[in-house]
Length: 344
Image (cartoon, rainbow, N blue to C red; front, side, top):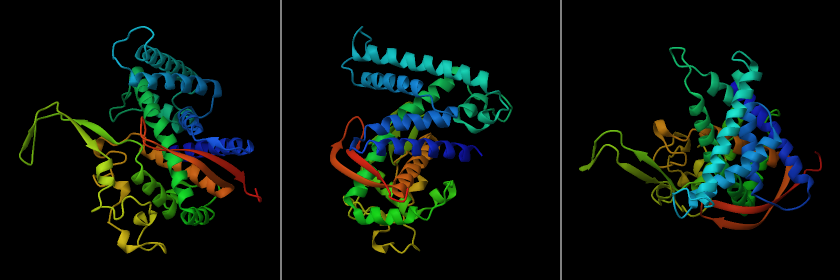
């Protein structure tokens, strides 16, 4: 019920955004996907969209993000780090008000409390029937999800559209596949659409939004003759395995067939390395792995599936002026134009 609800909310928000983008009749910057990502998260979190709050969060988020690239970590008045920390404080205050309002309007047994992210965070209980999170922990988790999903979603969408535009035969095959999917959309069909998922996984492999991640040892470790003390910080690379020729033949070429199931008509045995991208192992660590895998993994996969399906089902897509971006996120920035299909 929870997944069904936020799929419906995500789908409605997506169709409204697509209609707005297409109605301009012009090429638009993929920067729009940042606001779109925030709208999706807000809708799934609170069960509705509040444009004024979303704009405020988006503006403060950009200021906060800018503070990450300050020349000093000292909060000197007027510096980007000071402005960023003030923006972070405003975001947390906004979230505090939103949580308070949500609790006033949606008691624990209400429908929205059972079917939204915020309801799950506020009212979620452990096996002993105790609340799992404090107010501050809820705010920190929401802030983490916004931070992790804002730019990565933008990069994931624009990069997928870039690769599809560079491989029109793939775009055609994807359009044919999504035309057979049910409407309203069903999560089981989206998860089971082979070309759709292969395109997503290959786009992420070619251009992972994040280049790596960090882990911290919580005890002394002995590994292959090396000793690491408790508290050691490790950095792992996502780029290294996803460009390893022994894992991915012709790794520098977009080829979604490497992720197709063996019984698919487009499957190519010579491209199959036997890697399942959904497992999150070291050969495909796009979302990390293990108990500390990305919290927003399922949400990110679903939102990309929904947007790709709705775009391919209802619009002609044109892409121009692709620009490679490497920092602060990896991928492609594009300009895109949507034209509604004649039978829409």
